[in-house]
Length: 288
Image 1: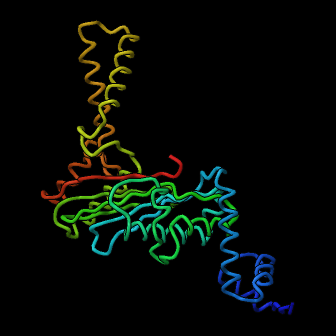
Image 2: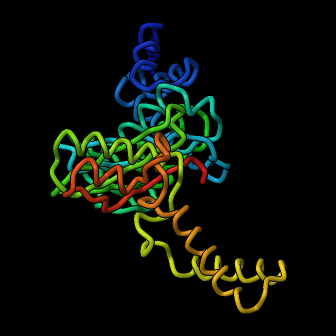
């Protein structure tokens, strides 16, 4: 069998292609008889195999990334997890998260879903691969378990979709508003998204708060007034007052705006344009 000389230049080229270590690249080139494409495929296969072995490990760090379409009629948000904050800040991981967000914006259906639902979907950047394979390849390069935890996509044909991403990449928000897609709408939708990131409301309007959550708060309020020894004849009013306060504190349009607590978010939106209306929002926080 004729031996093939593997040069430092060959190893460097393969490293540039794959991001794998020097020794792994040399071994792959030797196994592939110097064939660069075959060596790349070997490294890719080994990287995916390693990633699958790590799948059971805890991936609790990560980033949230948001992508808005050029016409601001749709937007996507993803949460990508890894094991350590160090890897979450690497160029490979950050780039993957942005690419996944772009893929969701271009290819995924609207709504909220677990990222694993896209595992077998063709990757928009290279249809010969799946989304799951691409994530595993980067996992193989970094040496950590990774998970595409979840994604969201909002579409608002008759308005705008805006976003806010906290500077640490740990909290992201998408907001959809119906109405004219003008400068006023684009400005206020970002303010609303910033508010949501900070205040963490449950729903847009009181009717959006789940009934089971209201029932739980009612039971808590009833227990509180009983323990406080309030007179029987006023307990009902006190309970209703506590519920109204809870709804106001956790409903987006009822909340005082974080940048100016003299106005509610609802008043802020109305002032920006009478035809503007918040239709939906989604908030992601890493690990939450």
